[in-house]
Length: 526
Image 1 (tube, rainbow, N blue to C red):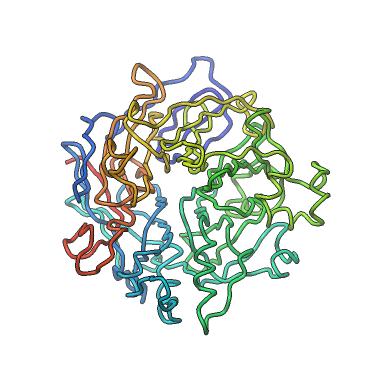
Image 2: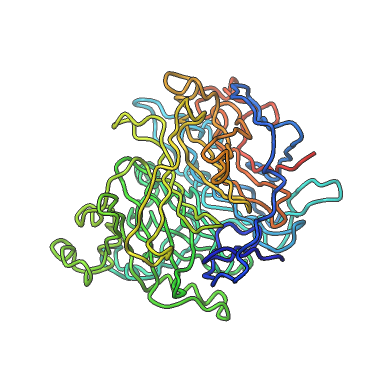
């Protein structure tokens, strides 16, 4: 594997989530190589019920809802974040989130919510619980270039709302979570990230409604909401491993969690809280990362400091009882602070923002890009993307500066930025999330269906959005991830036909022409 060197950072090709401190060489640094996806003829917005790509590109369906994985497991529903593991460009493991079911329960369980109608049955909830969480799938590229699941592989595995998961950090065993050290299940899994030791992060996002729906059904045990809203760590390469929920990363509607290192070698994790008027956070470990320890470095996520961003003062405020005494006015333990992260953040002056979603780190200069999807309460219908630079280019710093890198709107050609990805050349890839009941209407009519856009961050086209893909009707494109050689772009097509009210007359029939089926695709050049 070739490494390309830049001031302060060394970027392993194909892994967009890893940055390592680097002392610049005297001869400067080389320009990164291009990718198979860096040059294309942009497409126009579309309202068609198809996944549309530029001329010269094609997609294959890798896995689709309900697909038999072998070992008695099936691929879950509403796939979101994807994350590739393995150095081979032709075979590896793919972690995939399964976020929610919602109104698409008419396809999954046959349940349709109606005013005054019956609640979900215990059997329907059991089906929903199995279909959420995440999947580990062993995938291979065949001789004809098509990616498929290796059915029956020992690595194929489901993590569901029934899987035992360990708690770590200050909230473990704290009264604020009922004194438990292990919880049952994960769901509302939105985006995520990859750790330096090759495990996956999965962010539990909008869990509240799911907890309420499931807890209201007779015969189904009520759930404790404090057990959800965490970042979950999963080891795809060890089928017998128990996932972990890291309380040091805070409890809120996690969109994703992106990891890097500060200049002293401490682990830093950024995350956004995807809701109106919520905040951006980062965690800094107490101890330093040691590559020789491998997956034991996971212990770094159990001790450190969680910070919230004050965008007015350009500083990070510690959510720590010892470092910010004001927290003691309301909380008795650090575990209690972390369980109530949102309230604690507002108490100490964290800045309410317009739905902070994906946070990603530029592979060439280490700057932090944050997607703000929208906040219609504030008249912000189109969203924007911030670029934040830590003081001294050090992710351990507690002060920063930032700019609005690009605003959504007709002038930019996109609206409601959600998931972000950088390719190896430093181009920013943006998935949009216009709500399915708002697409092609009112302020959103110019944009057609949701899409995927490439935005250069340097050069003459800096800040210019070019559309690469258009989603099927009422679908959202999510979870983009490049294979190690940059030849394949994995992506989820989530909730096509989400506004369907009749199974026999769905609003989308993607991909097979019958009922809408969320699927993971592999995009390659023809």
